[in-house]
Length: 607
Image 1: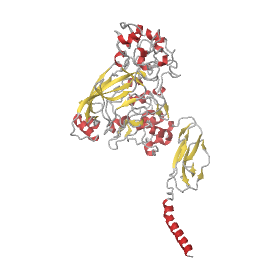
Image 2: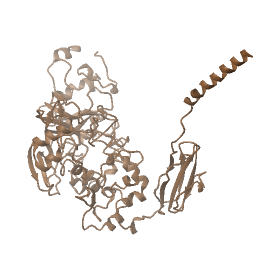
Image 3: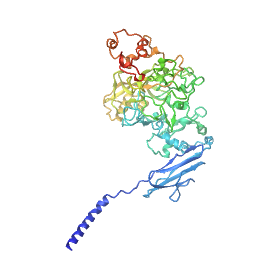
Image 4: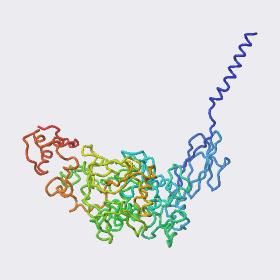
């Protein structure tokens, strides 16, 4: 009996001890609501649309299509829904733990193939995103709205970069306004929004979607021009006085034209043609084919921007060498089926010598012999900025603010560099890097070298410098707000240093910064305008560049050593005769130079 009592006592103790152990290991109750997704999202459709509702966990989905708010007594979703007339779908889910999702709503407008814009009455910017919700959500996530995006083509910095001000090394510097810190207002004048700074979120609210200004891109710039002004009280944009906004929204049922795109892109950097060097307002109106045969009207191609810069889900293809984010992974190419389908092949040009170049020389290199040209049918100059001096302020009556002193020029010969499609960039808060070759602090550089594999090509670039402040080994993100308002360079620098966490009493110096920007526009007709061989290859009359001196084309040693691989030293001849070593004897470039061209199947050793 005593033994039985002892056993029972021990068992009771074990059970008593096991209770808290069991409680400690008990799973935490599920308190997370499910997430239901509609596919496709609401928007405008020209025919019946089938909508699927999916949920991220075991749950029951309830919905209505009559505009009422659904409850657990509403219809249970069990199969895809088809709408042939305009319908508002409201839905939510309840999981097995009893958690209820917030009701969501999507509106599917069935237009029957005709525009619903013709009878619209302007009610505010939200009317666009209310009807075109899926398009607004796509636009919200894109670089045009976020001003940041994937930095997959950057060799420096974090995975997401852009021009938005940030202290984490993701905020780009340039040789123009340097950085937008502290000055969202003026910089945001070209932002495709109504004035609020974009917020990065995967689930934007209706109010955030309503902050997209669709009219900047989709207004009919010819028949119903749209412009906007900033409300001094709210800081938000609103339509300019005197506009017939009913007509503007009724006409806003078109894809963007060149005028829409150029309204921002041609005036980047503070004025027409200032920044890019190969883009100006003239690009939208000119008929001068010598200025740009692709975009010129009349005898030109009259190509719209999206003819080359294709859009997918409001993400645009194409990226300048100095831009940090990549909006689309779609690669641009001159040799498309619609444009120049054969030019990238080994037989696409009329001569063998030119065909040999296509794997290593970009089309732009030979076809853009100069940039910042003046169109012959515009009154304004299309000169571009080549230097910006922040130490000298001048009053700009057009912009009603002080501006740094610019240096501008026309008819410039490009700089050349090898580019593999990726970019080195210096961002805000990064240590400044001096380029010994230029004597300037680098802002951006195309990445590539003559010895890179096939895919890296020689491209033309605009070269741009600026006088900017340097403190504690970093380029100062000068306060443009201070400078634009006062013209006081010293105070603008000190305000920028405070933003960077550098005491305003710290000594700073003014240095030269520089960057390279890829050139892709202002292509004239090829006949009579494409670069001749002698423009690039070293000879007494070369005017474009001396490849042998600065891009890696030099001999790998003195002629006494190079020539002795095959014969006695000889005096250098012209480039045509010298290249008989390749074209006739079949020797690879590496016999004389520090690079190879293995794709040509040449001899790697002398014989």
